[in-house]
Length: 516
Image 1 (cartoon, helix red, strand yellow):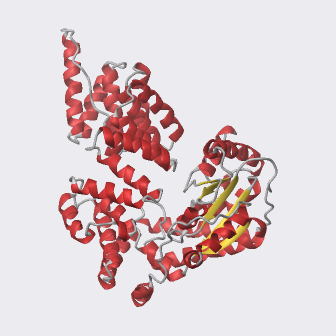
Image 2 (cartoon, helix red, strand yellow; image 1 turned 90 degrees about the vertical axis):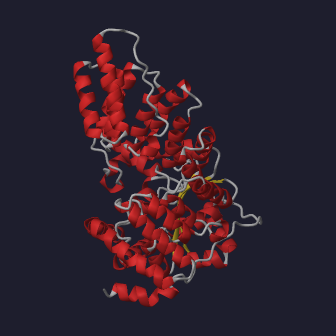
Image 3 (cartoon, one colour; image 1 turned 120 degrees about the horizontal axis):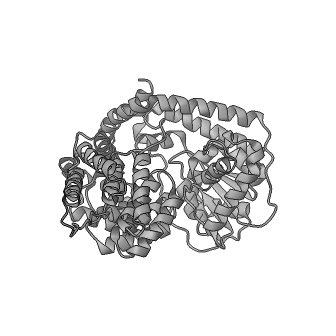
């Protein structure tokens, strides 16, 4: 488990007053195991706890520490078993409940994580570690307003809890409150939180809100973090390249971009091949099949899917749509995937989040779960947005299975989007993103999927170009309002950044890399 998610889950065993040797010996061994865990000597800590649990199966402290050890090593199913047993023995332990909630979250069980954390909050409502984990849960669900409030309370209670501060800044950024995001990140940096991730977040904000010189500060993080960590080295390289790009030092930026992308691509090359094959099959299936949309029968909000390749402008489009009355932004929320998984589970089948694997006769079950989730999230809103780019794979199935669906597809200049993807450090997924050739192939595939879907679903789709959003945001917004049956307004629109032509200084460099 990440250190961030267990920050604040402190060890609070009190020595028993009993004088018998077994109690005293067991406590001393447990104390030693926890000290070893905190030192990172996890194998030794695990061995001690396993011996204690073998001898004393109902020893809460040993079960709890053993769960933490397994979580620290990323063995979350093992951690789950020991922490569940610990909570079974002591349901009032907010430390064990918080740790269990964090493990649930790592395993993708966000609802169980939230349910478990409610019990921890009831036992200790002002613990910053519990509030931090609550923020992580809401952030995982893309409920950024709720996550922001949890992170804020956690950070107010303990300003040394850097994970809460980083989460707070990230939520401000997602909500478009860039000045507050910059203040949080720069405050963390000034107070000694020298993480490359903070500079990366600052680099993603509009430059006018950032006051620190990121290139100068990178030299400090390079000395502060372990350069043997591959991810840290790669992240620093991406941040440096992006900062050089912003400074107009394009040749220098490219010198950092090419080697780091080649390193990352070598590690994900097989994943990229598998994704390319999946894309080929998806496109062939969409071209060959007819799509009969479910229509607008019944009542409830419209599901507006804003889809396009990464870095195409989906978030910009969503921010514009979010100004219309009756719209709730959903960001890249997991509502569809959760409904798919529940349909598999309710039918006793192996669980998957892939719509194409779900037998068609279960579409009604999936639809019911989706509408329940939609109602929970939207409240009184008339339109709920979803910008998850992966939904392009099952857009046809979504249109056929779910009522009141609309799509806005976003396209962007090929060279510009290629560059911006190539300059991005993706923590996971997007295995095509480190090869210009694969990026180009992916974008062309995505655009062809858009063209086919728009031709087959003309009444519920619109195709928007990023360049038009920049030049005529009101005109683009009017198209979205008409699509969803919403009234257009005359209020000022959020500022739309202009990243058109960003690839121009790199054209020859990109051509040379493509020919490599």
